[in-house]
Length: 204
Image (cartoon, rainbow, N blue to C red; front, side, top):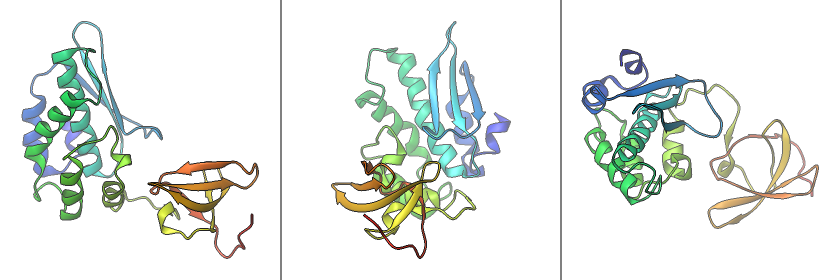
């Protein structure tokens, strides 16, 4: 438990301690994974495991941990008989998160986005553009990347191991982007982290 305290806001320590208590729960802090911030699994002999990505962003870590704790509670009650992100999980996630929704734990900008997100929480926080933007400000990432929505249509950018793309039109909540080497078009999240190509003429 004490190791966990290094990764979450100090004002949340007692609440989290009460939440976990003496549960037969293994919580591991692991190296960052591109496809997820955390996960939950049921082990043998009535034990359970949660993994959360190591991060300097204490607010992201706490949100991910509570998200996975909701999975833990639902699995204990229902096993695998309900949808992993169905109504039972949503209700539990809201219930567990509610005591943490205050400005002693979260900065105002994250608190506003998180409170809105919790009205109908999604399977991933990454699907909530406003919450992603709010959390990103506290990620302490020292790189030259930016969000896709911040660049103009027609501008070129690198994404995913230096593949070159051109931003095209918007389709509902996502952007159509063309990979220049193959001509294939892909749908991108507006909060995809990309590297803008500066001072380079756009091409078709």
